Image (cartoon, rainbow, N blue to C red; front, side, top):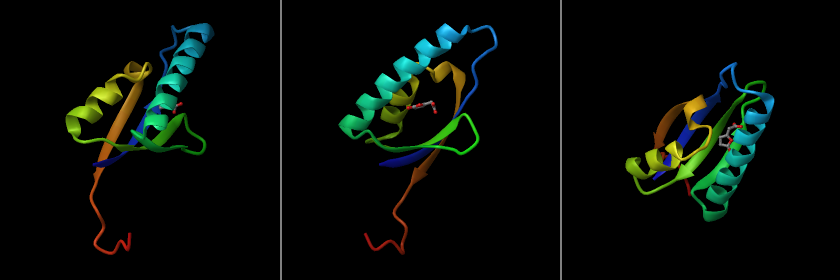
Length: 92
Ligand SMILES: O=C(O)CC1=CCC(=O)O1
């Protein structure tokens, strides 16, 4: 199943720059692995915001929740999930 997500990142003010950099490095590694294995089909920065749109290909809701909650920055992200179905006009 395909899911489009929107993730908005908001770090709390008590985190140091070094702590934030560490979260970002671990996030990049986790995300890169998901992209290489095909779980993340695409990821885009939303222009002008600390947020992204990410397209996931996973078997079901439970798997998506497991993947999302594994992001190192999960505690600092608000995530909106949109499940996608085939459009009747799609030619692919
Ligand atoms: O948008 C970000 O920087 C946070 C993030 C979530 C998944 C990812 O690769 O980065």
